[in-house]
Length: 167
Image 1 (tube, one colour):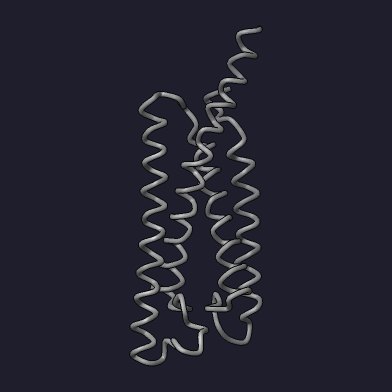
Image 2 (image 1 turned 135 degrees about the horizontal axis):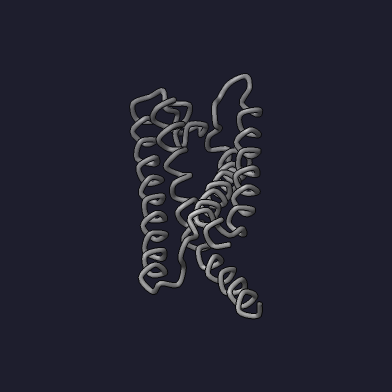
């Protein structure tokens, strides 16, 4: 019985080691989803679309926005690489086993953090772009934040839980 209690504490510690790589991966992957889906596929906005000096309706404005989008994607790539590097170190040491659910949860939490920070800073404070400019602009921006809160809440709940295989 005492051994089982010790293992539960150890497993909880092991799962918490996945917080940093999971959040880094979630920040980067959330940025990729934003950039690929909203910037490139749907073309709802670019990084600087709502700025007066860089509208995406002129060639110069589109060039500037494409550069800003590329720098944004470069930053998200660095976050993913950093997350993989940290995760690789943990796996190599054998510190964590059977924590797929926990890792996935922290990835969702990182994506939620990305949405909240990006949404609050870029959409509301700096107003350099909005999710989708137009008559329902505020609703799209709020929806982006709501999605961020949901991802963060579900992610933290999953990240703190143990996998069924670890029980």
